[in-house]
Image 1 (cartoon, rainbow, N blue to C red):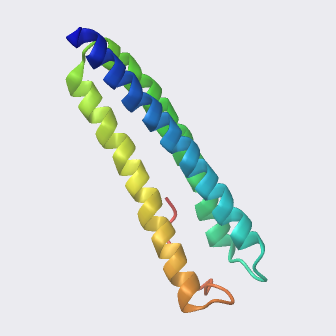
Image 2 (image 1 turned 90 degrees about the horizontal axis):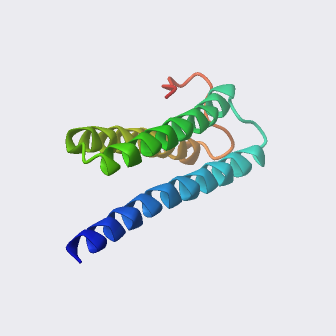
Length: 119
């Protein structure tokens, strides 16, 4: 019975992980739509948002590999993949905060001369 519960728990965690990617994708799309409504959008912001799409694809690929490692009980690789996925999520989160901060400081448009790091 313990194995069935453990497998069920693993599947629930994996399902939540993939659901979180879908939610992140929706948030990125929403941010893109919000920016598109602005009068002037620096090209750097557009590039940064586009980079999120690539990061999200990488996260999904890592999560698929993560599932394989879970099924093979390769816990060191599971830990590594979880860390990579979390790191990519943190990168998006931190960059999005930076964008929001820049836009809040100048609601009409972010200054294109500001240094912006592209993920």
